[in-house]
Length: 141
Image (cartoon, rainbow, N blue to C red; front, side, top):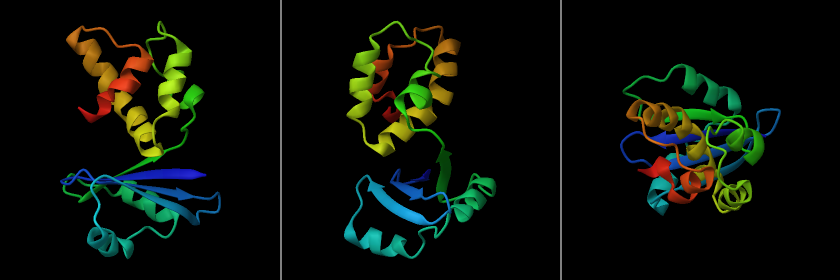
C-alpha cells in the first residue's frame, strides 16, 4: 500500500490517499474541519492514481495550494522509532501512544521529525522521549 498526504497550504486541511501496488486508489481519509460542501468540491480533484501524486510532489511550487508528501513506512518500528534519536524512554509507552494516533497523525509525526530534530539540536535543548513527542503532538505546534 502506498500512502500520500496532501496538506492545504492555507487551510491546514489534510487528505490521506492510499493506493494499492498497482497504483489504484483504495482509500481516502479527510482530517480536519471538512464540511460536506468542501468534500463535494474536492471530490472531482482526487488523484486517480499514484503517478498523479508523484507528479504533484515533483512539480510542487511555493505557491501550490496543496503540499503533497509520500510516506513509505508507517510502521512504529522502522517508520518512527528507528529514526527517532532519543531512545531513553520506555519503548512500550511510545508504542502505546503510536497506536492511539490516526494514520494522518502518524504521517505528520514522521514528517515533522526532519524539522524538529535539527531545530532542537540548533536550540541546544533536549529531544523529548518518543512517548512525550507522540503524546504532546509536537508536530501540531
